[in-house]
Length: 132
Image: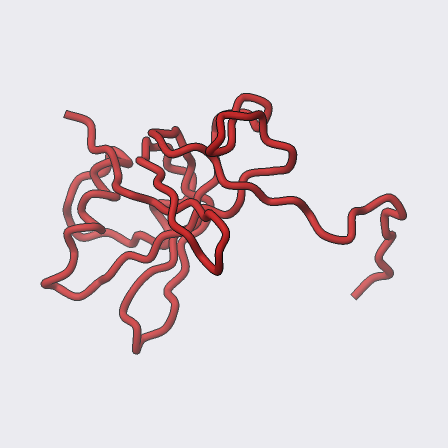
């Protein structure tokens, strides 16, 4: 590895915040096959709304950046309802395809909800909004 030029002004830890529950436009950032035993995909999203326009659950402007928005999608034949919703929300046909290759870069609307994790609010994908 080449020598890393560090930024002396870099923060020790970034300030991640939850956004207010609602519907947001997002982009699929990455899709990873977690492992064969789990038989699911880890899907990471990024907000398309500028951070300056996002608000926290109290309705105040974010002081940091929005926390990670990640979902897990089952691949078993009898549990593909979420994968189908994600696929169709991305504007793709529900047919055989490679989600690891074809989903990254897709833009879609998702309903974001808030769940408590270790006493802190965290954003979670509620559902994928499939266009009618």
